[in-house]
Length: 297
Ligand SMILES: [Zn+2]
Image 1 (cartoon, rainbow, N blue to C red):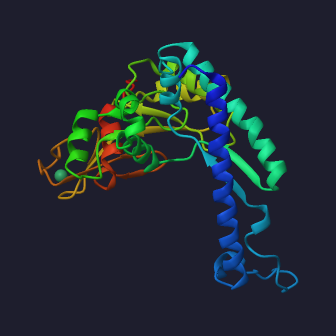
Image 2 (image 1 turned 135 degrees about the vertical axis):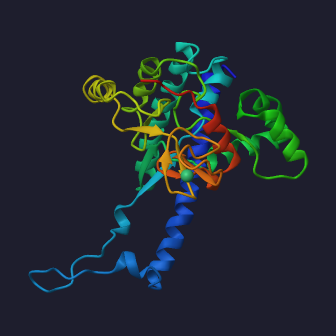
Image 3 (image 1 turned 180 degrees about the vertical axis):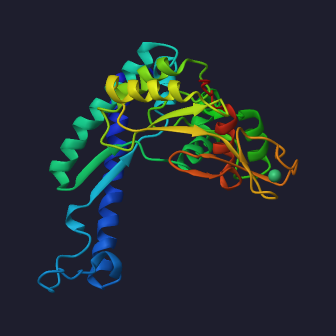
C-alpha cells in the first residue's frame, strides 16, 4: 500500500510464476506434438500450385505466451487511495506499473527465449474469480471488501451459504470502473492512455443508453475516436431484448416484449468482447451489466 518498490517486486514475482506456467504448458504441448495428438494444427495443407505439402498450419515455435491484466483500477485504488476516475495519481500508478512490467517482460523473454505479450485479456470469468478468491482468503478479505465491485453484502451472504457464483468482480484490464458516473470523453481520455502500453486486447466500450442513438452523433464520435485518440479498438453496445414468442428484437432491456407483451424474453448484451445471452453470464458479469453507466446520444 503506497510502496512502489514493493508493488513492482510483487508484479515481477507474479510474472515469474506466469513463466513457470508457460514452461509447463510448452512441455505438454511438446509431448502432445511428439505423439501426434494435435492433428488439426499440425496438418500440412497442399500448395495449390506445386501440389506438394507445405509447412504446418501452426508454427509452434513462434507462439506468443500472454500475460493478462485484470483489476488495474482496484490495484490503483488500493495503492493510491483513489480509483482511476477519481484522481490522476491513480492513473500514474497504473501506468508506472505497466511500464515496469513491460521492462521485466523483455528480461523474461531474453532469459527464456519465449515470446511474451502483456495484454488485456477478456477475463470473463477471471474478473469474478479473483474477486471471490480475495474475499474468501483471510489475508486479503479486509481489503478486498473495500475494493471489489458489485454487491459485496450479497456476495458475503451467498459465500457463507456455500454458493460459488456471486455478484462481485474486479474491473476489466485497465478500464475505469464501469459504474463511474463520468462523461464518455473523460473516460476515453483516461482509457486511451493504456492502449500504447499494452501488447493487445485492449478495447474501449461505449455503453449506449438510447434505444435509437442519433446517427450524426455516432458518426462524430467515431471520427473523434479514430482520428484524435490512441484508442485502437472500440465497440458500441446497445442492450437488447429478444422476444421468444414473436421474435421481435428491441432495446433496451425490458421485462416484457413491447410488440406482443410476452414476458418470455431473453436479454442480450456484450459481456466483454462479444454479444451473448445474459442468461449465460456469471453473476459477477450480470452485476456489472446492472452497474454500467450508459451514455446517451
Ligand atoms: Zn414479442
